[in-house]
Image (tube, rainbow, N blue to C red):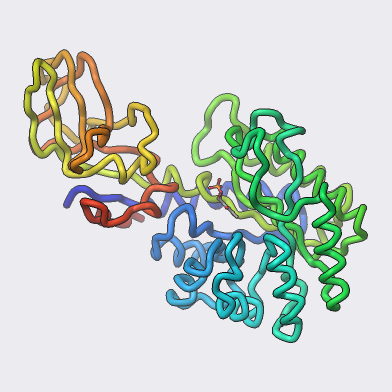
Length: 376
Ligand SMILES: Cc1ncc(COP(=O)(O)O)c(C=O)c1O
Protein backbone atom coordinates (compact mmCIF):
# COMPACT_ATOMS: atom_id res chain seq x y z
CA UNK A 1 0.00 0.00 0.00
CA UNK A 2 1.37 3.41 -0.99
CA UNK A 3 0.69 5.98 1.67
CA UNK A 4 -0.81 8.43 2.23
CA UNK A 5 -3.96 7.05 0.65
CA UNK A 6 -7.71 6.95 0.96
CA UNK A 7 -9.48 3.62 0.63
CA UNK A 8 -13.08 3.86 -0.50
CA UNK A 9 -15.10 0.90 0.75
CA UNK A 10 -17.84 0.67 -1.85
CA UNK A 11 -19.61 -2.08 0.11
CA UNK A 12 -20.01 0.25 3.10
CA UNK A 13 -21.09 3.10 0.83
CA UNK A 14 -23.75 0.91 -0.75
CA UNK A 15 -24.96 -0.34 2.64
CA UNK A 16 -25.28 3.23 3.92
CA UNK A 17 -27.17 4.28 0.79
CA UNK A 18 -29.52 1.30 0.99
CA UNK A 19 -30.28 2.15 4.59
CA UNK A 20 -31.53 5.55 3.43
CA UNK A 21 -33.44 4.05 0.51
CA UNK A 22 -35.14 1.33 2.55
CA UNK A 23 -36.20 3.71 5.31
CA UNK A 24 -37.65 6.42 3.06
CA UNK A 25 -39.28 4.18 0.47
CA UNK A 26 -41.10 2.31 3.21
CA UNK A 27 -42.22 5.49 4.99
CA UNK A 28 -43.20 7.58 1.93
CA UNK A 29 -44.90 4.88 -0.08
CA UNK A 30 -44.48 6.90 -3.30
CA UNK A 31 -41.55 7.70 -5.55
CA UNK A 32 -38.29 8.61 -3.80
CA UNK A 33 -35.17 9.85 -5.62
CA UNK A 34 -31.69 10.50 -4.26
CA UNK A 35 -28.95 12.94 -5.13
CA UNK A 36 -25.29 12.00 -4.60
CA UNK A 37 -23.76 15.10 -2.99
CA UNK A 38 -20.71 15.99 -5.09
CA UNK A 39 -19.83 18.71 -2.59
CA UNK A 40 -19.35 16.09 0.13
CA UNK A 41 -16.95 14.04 -1.99
CA UNK A 42 -16.32 14.63 -5.70
CA UNK A 43 -14.54 11.31 -6.30
CA UNK A 44 -15.50 10.17 -9.79
CA UNK A 45 -15.65 6.49 -8.76
CA UNK A 46 -18.18 7.24 -6.04
CA UNK A 47 -20.26 9.44 -8.33
CA UNK A 48 -20.35 6.72 -11.00
CA UNK A 49 -21.13 3.99 -8.48
CA UNK A 50 -23.97 5.99 -6.93
CA UNK A 51 -25.56 6.50 -10.32
CA UNK A 52 -24.82 3.20 -12.10
CA UNK A 53 -25.35 0.83 -9.17
CA UNK A 54 -27.98 2.65 -7.15
CA UNK A 55 -29.72 4.88 -9.70
CA UNK A 56 -28.93 8.07 -7.78
CA UNK A 57 -28.94 11.52 -9.33
CA UNK A 58 -25.76 13.59 -9.22
CA UNK A 59 -26.36 16.56 -6.94
CA UNK A 60 -24.27 19.63 -7.76
CA UNK A 61 -24.06 22.99 -5.98
CA UNK A 62 -22.00 25.04 -8.43
CA UNK A 63 -21.45 25.46 -12.17
CA UNK A 64 -18.03 23.80 -11.75
CA UNK A 65 -19.55 20.73 -10.11
CA UNK A 66 -22.14 20.67 -12.87
CA UNK A 67 -19.37 20.79 -15.45
CA UNK A 68 -17.54 17.97 -13.67
CA UNK A 69 -20.71 15.89 -13.86
CA UNK A 70 -21.13 16.66 -17.58
CA UNK A 71 -17.46 15.85 -18.22
CA UNK A 72 -17.89 12.49 -16.51
CA UNK A 73 -20.70 11.73 -18.93
CA UNK A 74 -23.78 12.31 -16.78
CA UNK A 75 -26.77 13.68 -18.68
CA UNK A 76 -28.59 16.73 -17.38
CA UNK A 77 -31.67 14.64 -16.71
CA UNK A 78 -29.68 12.69 -14.13
CA UNK A 79 -28.47 15.81 -12.36
CA UNK A 80 -29.80 18.07 -9.61
CA UNK A 81 -28.44 21.61 -9.87
CA UNK A 82 -28.45 23.58 -6.60
CA UNK A 83 -26.35 26.32 -5.07
CA UNK A 84 -26.09 30.10 -4.76
CA UNK A 85 -23.96 30.93 -7.81
CA UNK A 86 -25.79 29.46 -10.77
CA UNK A 87 -25.95 32.76 -12.61
CA UNK A 88 -22.15 33.10 -12.57
CA UNK A 89 -22.12 30.78 -15.57
CA UNK A 90 -25.29 31.28 -17.54
CA UNK A 91 -24.28 28.64 -20.09
CA UNK A 92 -24.24 26.05 -17.30
CA UNK A 93 -27.69 27.02 -16.06
CA UNK A 94 -29.10 27.01 -19.58
CA UNK A 95 -27.58 23.59 -20.29
CA UNK A 96 -29.06 22.25 -17.06
CA UNK A 97 -32.58 23.52 -17.66
CA UNK A 98 -32.53 22.69 -21.38
CA UNK A 99 -31.33 19.20 -20.59
CA UNK A 100 -34.07 18.56 -18.03
CA UNK A 101 -32.08 18.67 -14.78
CA UNK A 102 -33.78 19.30 -11.48
CA UNK A 103 -32.96 22.96 -10.80
CA UNK A 104 -33.62 24.50 -7.40
CA UNK A 105 -33.66 28.30 -7.61
CA UNK A 106 -31.69 29.76 -4.74
CA UNK A 107 -32.38 33.49 -5.06
CA UNK A 108 -34.48 35.99 -7.00
CA UNK A 109 -31.74 36.38 -9.63
CA UNK A 110 -32.06 32.67 -10.41
CA UNK A 111 -35.84 33.11 -10.61
CA UNK A 112 -35.60 36.11 -12.88
CA UNK A 113 -33.10 34.28 -15.11
CA UNK A 114 -35.44 31.32 -15.53
CA UNK A 115 -38.36 33.67 -16.24
CA UNK A 116 -36.30 35.31 -19.01
CA UNK A 117 -35.44 31.93 -20.49
CA UNK A 118 -38.80 30.24 -20.27
CA UNK A 119 -38.42 28.85 -23.76
CA UNK A 120 -35.30 26.98 -22.60
CA UNK A 121 -37.12 25.17 -19.83
CA UNK A 122 -37.52 21.63 -21.10
CA UNK A 123 -39.24 20.24 -18.04
CA UNK A 124 -41.01 22.75 -15.79
CA UNK A 125 -41.89 19.91 -13.44
CA UNK A 126 -38.25 19.99 -12.34
CA UNK A 127 -37.98 23.65 -11.35
CA UNK A 128 -38.05 24.19 -7.58
CA UNK A 129 -37.46 26.98 -5.09
CA UNK A 130 -35.02 26.73 -2.20
CA UNK A 131 -36.71 27.88 0.98
CA UNK A 132 -35.23 30.06 3.72
CA UNK A 133 -37.17 30.59 6.94
CA UNK A 134 -36.27 31.09 10.57
CA UNK A 135 -35.44 27.49 11.50
CA UNK A 136 -33.20 28.73 14.32
CA UNK A 137 -36.26 30.21 16.07
CA UNK A 138 -37.92 26.79 16.04
CA UNK A 139 -34.80 24.80 16.91
CA UNK A 140 -32.64 27.17 18.99
CA UNK A 141 -28.91 26.51 18.89
CA UNK A 142 -29.22 23.84 16.19
CA UNK A 143 -28.60 25.59 12.87
CA UNK A 144 -25.13 26.18 11.46
CA UNK A 145 -25.78 29.89 10.97
CA UNK A 146 -26.95 30.17 14.57
CA UNK A 147 -28.43 33.52 15.50
CA UNK A 148 -27.26 35.04 12.26
CA UNK A 149 -29.46 34.26 9.23
CA UNK A 150 -28.79 31.39 6.86
CA UNK A 151 -27.54 32.81 3.56
CA UNK A 152 -29.21 30.24 1.30
CA UNK A 153 -32.60 30.12 -0.31
CA UNK A 154 -35.45 32.58 -0.69
CA UNK A 155 -36.88 34.15 2.45
CA UNK A 156 -40.47 33.33 3.27
CA UNK A 157 -40.85 35.96 5.98
CA UNK A 158 -39.86 39.05 3.93
CA UNK A 159 -42.23 37.92 1.15
CA UNK A 160 -39.46 37.15 -1.37
CA UNK A 161 -40.81 33.62 -1.55
CA UNK A 162 -44.24 35.02 -2.52
CA UNK A 163 -42.49 37.19 -5.13
CA UNK A 164 -40.66 34.19 -6.54
CA UNK A 165 -43.90 32.23 -6.88
CA UNK A 166 -45.59 35.21 -8.57
CA UNK A 167 -42.68 35.81 -10.94
CA UNK A 168 -42.65 32.18 -12.05
CA UNK A 169 -46.42 32.02 -12.44
CA UNK A 170 -46.44 35.26 -14.45
CA UNK A 171 -43.88 33.68 -16.77
CA UNK A 172 -46.10 30.64 -17.18
CA UNK A 173 -44.11 28.32 -14.94
CA UNK A 174 -45.87 26.68 -12.02
CA UNK A 175 -43.30 26.17 -9.22
CA UNK A 176 -42.92 22.41 -9.14
CA UNK A 177 -40.71 21.80 -6.15
CA UNK A 178 -39.49 23.00 -2.79
CA UNK A 179 -35.89 22.55 -1.70
CA UNK A 180 -35.57 22.50 2.07
CA UNK A 181 -31.86 21.73 2.61
CA UNK A 182 -30.52 23.47 5.72
CA UNK A 183 -27.26 22.59 7.49
CA UNK A 184 -27.46 22.09 11.21
CA UNK A 185 -25.04 21.25 13.98
CA UNK A 186 -27.47 18.81 15.58
CA UNK A 187 -28.86 16.84 12.60
CA UNK A 188 -31.81 16.23 14.93
CA UNK A 189 -35.24 14.80 14.18
CA UNK A 190 -36.73 18.09 15.45
CA UNK A 191 -34.96 19.96 12.63
CA UNK A 192 -36.43 17.69 9.97
CA UNK A 193 -39.87 17.85 11.58
CA UNK A 194 -39.71 21.63 11.27
CA UNK A 195 -38.39 21.56 7.67
CA UNK A 196 -41.09 19.15 6.51
CA UNK A 197 -43.79 21.04 8.40
CA UNK A 198 -42.70 24.27 6.73
CA UNK A 199 -42.82 22.61 3.30
CA UNK A 200 -46.37 21.38 4.00
CA UNK A 201 -47.39 24.84 5.21
CA UNK A 202 -46.05 26.49 2.04
CA UNK A 203 -47.91 23.98 -0.11
CA UNK A 204 -51.15 24.97 1.60
CA UNK A 205 -50.47 28.72 1.81
CA UNK A 206 -49.51 29.07 -1.85
CA UNK A 207 -51.71 26.37 -3.37
CA UNK A 208 -48.63 24.63 -4.74
CA UNK A 209 -49.03 21.53 -6.88
CA UNK A 210 -45.69 19.96 -6.16
CA UNK A 211 -44.06 17.40 -8.40
CA UNK A 212 -41.22 17.09 -5.91
CA UNK A 213 -40.13 18.06 -2.47
CA UNK A 214 -36.37 17.93 -1.90
CA UNK A 215 -35.44 17.60 1.78
CA UNK A 216 -31.71 17.99 1.03
CA UNK A 217 -29.04 16.41 3.21
CA UNK A 218 -27.93 16.91 6.78
CA UNK A 219 -28.74 13.48 8.26
CA UNK A 220 -26.67 11.51 10.67
CA UNK A 221 -25.84 8.02 9.37
CA UNK A 222 -23.46 5.19 8.61
CA UNK A 223 -23.08 4.34 12.30
CA UNK A 224 -25.30 4.05 15.32
CA UNK A 225 -24.60 6.62 18.01
CA UNK A 226 -26.74 7.00 21.09
CA UNK A 227 -28.90 10.10 20.98
CA UNK A 228 -28.67 10.45 17.18
CA UNK A 229 -31.72 9.64 15.04
CA UNK A 230 -31.80 6.52 12.90
CA UNK A 231 -32.72 6.76 9.19
CA UNK A 232 -36.10 5.27 10.10
CA UNK A 233 -36.71 8.09 12.58
CA UNK A 234 -35.80 10.74 10.00
CA UNK A 235 -38.04 9.04 7.46
CA UNK A 236 -40.90 8.83 9.93
CA UNK A 237 -40.95 12.48 11.00
CA UNK A 238 -40.37 13.85 7.48
CA UNK A 239 -43.03 11.76 5.77
CA UNK A 240 -45.55 12.26 8.59
CA UNK A 241 -45.36 16.05 8.18
CA UNK A 242 -45.24 16.04 4.38
CA UNK A 243 -48.24 13.76 4.10
CA UNK A 244 -50.35 16.43 5.82
CA UNK A 245 -50.23 18.42 2.57
CA UNK A 246 -48.85 16.13 -0.14
CA UNK A 247 -49.95 12.90 -1.75
CA UNK A 248 -47.04 10.45 -2.17
CA UNK A 249 -48.62 9.22 -5.39
CA UNK A 250 -48.31 12.66 -6.93
CA UNK A 251 -45.11 14.00 -5.38
CA UNK A 252 -41.58 12.66 -5.58
CA UNK A 253 -39.61 12.89 -2.37
CA UNK A 254 -35.94 13.76 -3.02
CA UNK A 255 -33.09 13.36 -0.55
CA UNK A 256 -29.49 14.53 -0.88
CA UNK A 257 -27.59 12.69 1.87
CA UNK A 258 -23.90 13.51 1.96
CA UNK A 259 -21.96 12.84 5.15
CA UNK A 260 -24.43 10.19 6.33
CA UNK A 261 -23.58 7.89 3.43
CA UNK A 262 -20.02 8.91 2.56
CA UNK A 263 -18.19 9.62 5.84
CA UNK A 264 -17.92 6.04 7.09
CA UNK A 265 -17.19 4.64 3.61
CA UNK A 266 -13.61 5.89 3.50
CA UNK A 267 -10.49 5.21 5.56
CA UNK A 268 -7.23 7.12 5.32
CA UNK A 269 -3.82 5.54 5.85
CA UNK A 270 -0.58 7.33 6.52
CA UNK A 271 2.90 6.05 7.51
CA UNK A 272 5.43 7.25 10.03
CA UNK A 273 8.35 8.94 8.26
CA UNK A 274 10.50 9.79 11.25
CA UNK A 275 10.52 10.12 15.02
CA UNK A 276 12.61 12.74 16.84
CA UNK A 277 12.93 13.79 20.45
CA UNK A 278 12.39 17.41 21.40
CA UNK A 279 12.91 18.13 25.11
CA UNK A 280 11.38 14.82 26.10
CA UNK A 281 8.48 14.86 23.63
CA UNK A 282 8.49 12.40 20.74
CA UNK A 283 7.62 14.17 17.50
CA UNK A 284 6.28 11.60 15.06
CA UNK A 285 6.17 12.90 11.48
CA UNK A 286 3.79 11.13 9.11
CA UNK A 287 3.85 11.10 5.30
CA UNK A 288 0.25 12.37 5.25
CA UNK A 289 -1.25 15.55 6.64
CA UNK A 290 -4.10 16.56 8.89
CA UNK A 291 -5.40 18.50 5.87
CA UNK A 292 -6.36 15.15 4.33
CA UNK A 293 -8.76 14.20 7.15
CA UNK A 294 -9.57 17.46 8.91
CA UNK A 295 -9.10 20.16 6.26
CA UNK A 296 -10.18 23.05 8.51
CA UNK A 297 -7.72 21.78 11.12
CA UNK A 298 -10.43 21.87 13.78
CA UNK A 299 -8.73 21.55 17.14
CA UNK A 300 -9.26 17.94 18.23
CA UNK A 301 -7.32 14.74 18.69
CA UNK A 302 -8.03 12.90 15.44
CA UNK A 303 -8.95 9.30 16.38
CA UNK A 304 -6.81 6.63 14.66
CA UNK A 305 -6.17 2.93 14.79
CA UNK A 306 -2.81 1.16 15.18
CA UNK A 307 -4.21 -2.22 14.16
CA UNK A 308 -1.95 -2.32 11.09
CA UNK A 309 1.17 -2.40 13.32
CA UNK A 310 1.87 -6.08 14.08
CA UNK A 311 3.96 -5.74 17.25
CA UNK A 312 2.33 -2.57 18.60
CA UNK A 313 1.26 -4.07 21.93
CA UNK A 314 4.83 -5.18 22.71
CA UNK A 315 6.34 -1.70 22.26
CA UNK A 316 7.62 0.48 25.11
CA UNK A 317 5.35 3.29 26.26
CA UNK A 318 6.34 6.92 25.58
CA UNK A 319 5.35 9.60 28.02
CA UNK A 320 4.42 12.21 25.43
CA UNK A 321 4.04 11.84 21.70
CA UNK A 322 2.76 14.31 19.10
CA UNK A 323 1.70 12.78 15.81
CA UNK A 324 2.31 15.39 13.12
CA UNK A 325 1.62 15.75 9.43
CA UNK A 326 4.28 16.26 6.79
CA UNK A 327 3.47 19.84 5.84
CA UNK A 328 5.55 22.78 6.93
CA UNK A 329 2.83 24.10 9.24
CA UNK A 330 3.16 24.11 13.02
CA UNK A 331 -0.48 23.14 13.54
CA UNK A 332 -0.36 20.13 11.22
CA UNK A 333 -0.88 17.73 14.14
CA UNK A 334 -3.13 14.68 14.13
CA UNK A 335 -2.96 13.90 17.83
CA UNK A 336 -1.24 14.83 21.07
CA UNK A 337 -0.85 11.65 23.13
CA UNK A 338 0.27 10.76 26.63
CA UNK A 339 1.42 7.30 27.71
CA UNK A 340 1.02 5.53 24.41
CA UNK A 341 3.19 2.93 22.73
CA UNK A 342 6.14 4.07 20.67
CA UNK A 343 5.70 4.59 16.95
CA UNK A 344 8.51 3.77 14.53
CA UNK A 345 9.27 4.73 10.92
CA UNK A 346 7.22 2.63 8.53
CA UNK A 347 4.29 2.13 10.93
CA UNK A 348 0.91 2.72 9.30
CA UNK A 349 -1.92 4.51 11.12
CA UNK A 350 -5.46 4.26 9.89
CA UNK A 351 -8.08 6.99 10.27
CA UNK A 352 -11.72 5.89 9.96
CA UNK A 353 -14.69 7.86 8.67
CA UNK A 354 -12.59 10.01 6.38
CA UNK A 355 -14.98 10.35 3.44
CA UNK A 356 -17.00 13.52 3.99
CA UNK A 357 -15.64 16.99 3.29
CA UNK A 358 -12.06 15.68 3.27
CA UNK A 359 -10.98 14.54 -0.21
CA UNK A 360 -13.14 17.29 -1.69
CA UNK A 361 -10.97 19.91 0.01
CA UNK A 362 -7.61 18.48 -1.06
CA UNK A 363 -5.45 21.00 -2.86
CA UNK A 364 -1.83 21.13 -3.96
CA UNK A 365 -0.87 23.33 -1.03
CA UNK A 366 2.56 22.02 0.04
CA UNK A 367 1.64 18.40 -0.77
CA UNK A 368 -0.47 16.76 -3.42
CA UNK A 369 -3.80 15.08 -2.65
CA UNK A 370 -3.50 11.52 -1.34
CA UNK A 371 -3.93 8.59 -3.72
CA UNK A 372 -7.34 6.84 -3.85
CA UNK A 373 -7.96 3.05 -3.82
CA UNK A 374 -11.27 1.24 -4.10
CA UNK A 375 -12.34 -1.82 -2.17
CA UNK A 376 -15.47 -3.80 -2.97
C1 LIG B 1 -27.64 21.52 -1.16
C2 LIG B 1 -26.96 20.46 -0.35
N1 LIG B 1 -27.43 19.20 -0.41
C3 LIG B 1 -26.86 18.20 0.30
C4 LIG B 1 -25.78 18.45 1.12
C5 LIG B 1 -25.18 17.30 1.91
O1 LIG B 1 -25.29 17.55 3.27
P1 LIG B 1 -24.75 16.50 4.36
O2 LIG B 1 -23.37 16.13 4.00
O3 LIG B 1 -24.84 17.27 5.65
O4 LIG B 1 -25.70 15.34 4.32
C6 LIG B 1 -25.25 19.75 1.20
C7 LIG B 1 -24.15 20.06 2.10
O5 LIG B 1 -24.24 20.93 2.94
C8 LIG B 1 -25.86 20.78 0.44
O6 LIG B 1 -25.39 22.03 0.47
